[in-house]
Figure 1: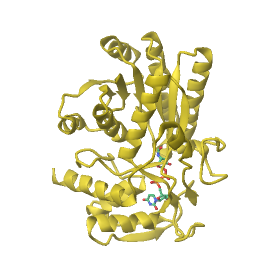
Figure 2: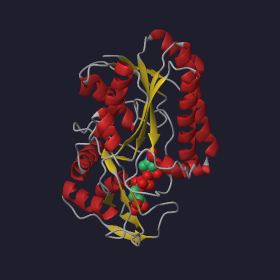
Figure 3: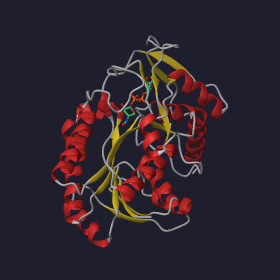
Figure 4: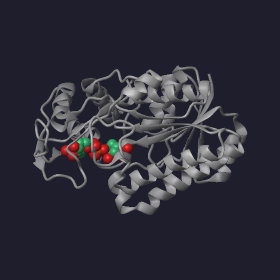
Length: 335
Ligand code: WQD
């Protein structure tokens, strides 16, 4: 096994990946500035893994901080989550997104190079594909970013490719997520947005706990069976396990790869609402609202390459995503 640096390891996907890496026998160090995570995630990770968590509080934009972290640990690889990821926010604040997501990434890569650490798993996104020209969406789908967030991720992917062309010691795993959802089986970690959520599942979760009055269904006149938007939701624990398989591939073979992490199954807004009602045992109020700018009818992954190359296959379906999310938000409310 290896020693892994997890940037953004206190965040939603980072914390779940921490748990799966430790379970797989890796030694893991977290770096996080807690800008989008609560500090007590560390305590909860210690409960789940029944072991102390090694972490350093700091920012990937701070090169001296990173150099100090790399001096303290001899890493075999890095998994990079520390970035901003809200499409709408990126439209309002493009400079913040390029600074954090691109300059932060370049700073991290510089510190890695100086420490002679050349393996990195990069958290990318399926929104690099823009509007689908074909479905299911495979890795050879045209790249057509539509938001500053998606452009920042394409820029990072390009930087990785050009870095490897300049120095073959680099090996990367670029993982393009579809729609992460759900929470850990322990209900000790999960999605914990600071304010009113943009994404569907955390919004429905707050309707289920009574924090929000009803769900606004953004359009029911899409070209889908029930008229509402269809997406490829993937359980965050499945997603985390995909990261373990990717970093293991880098450590074992130094073989670079670009993969979609999705289930290949699309669910509509109403599918999720009904599944969440089953999970929480009550009817959830909703209203049909106007379409949200930039939304598309239907988008789901072709998961074949991750299956054939990594042996990755999502195990959990929509009902498990909703059940685990409900268990998490119920516990969160009662803490
Ligand atoms: C899903 C569906 C909405 C909220 C986004 C980012 C993407 C990725 C995942 C980072 C759509 C509908 C939503 C609501 C609704 N994040 N909806 N009412 O837009 O597919 O992807 O999150 O990588 O970058 O773009 O996810 O959860 O926002 O929306 O009706 O209150 O739910 O119209 O059809 P999306 P989403």
